[in-house]
Amino acid sequence: MLNPPLVIAGGYYTGLSYTVTSSQAAITGATAITLSQPGTYLLFSNARLDSTGAIAASHTITLNLYRTNNTAGNITGAQQAFVSQIVTAAQTENIIALPVVAYTTSNSNDAITMYVGSGDAVSNLQVISVSILPIRIY
Image (cartoon, rainbow, N blue to C red; front, side, top):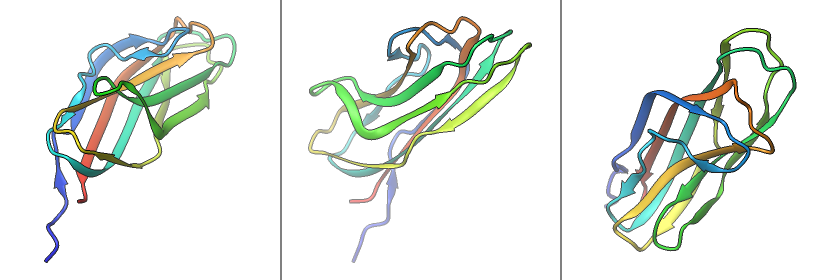
């Protein structure tokens, strides 16, 4: 008999105000989730970005999931790039869904968080919320 899928310690972080910088970095306030059991997971994730004022030019923004321990690095396939809008005032910019990925670990403590960055700083673009939902499938 198959065991049902199991959600392990997902994270939803709202009320953030992390400004997009010119290099990939962890989103402050979006604490890493910990996968407490070995296995294969489907990782669902998204982020909301808002402009806090005018953005005079388009920028390519990249979001990605990142394992912060046990040989730290990007999680293959869990990245999404998009081009920001040109805006004249504060508004909801985008809600970006990263691709759903299958992630397998033999560890019982993989820590996963979301990174964001651009080729140049975007002073009026902030990450407002982040969601990471791991579902263990076996």
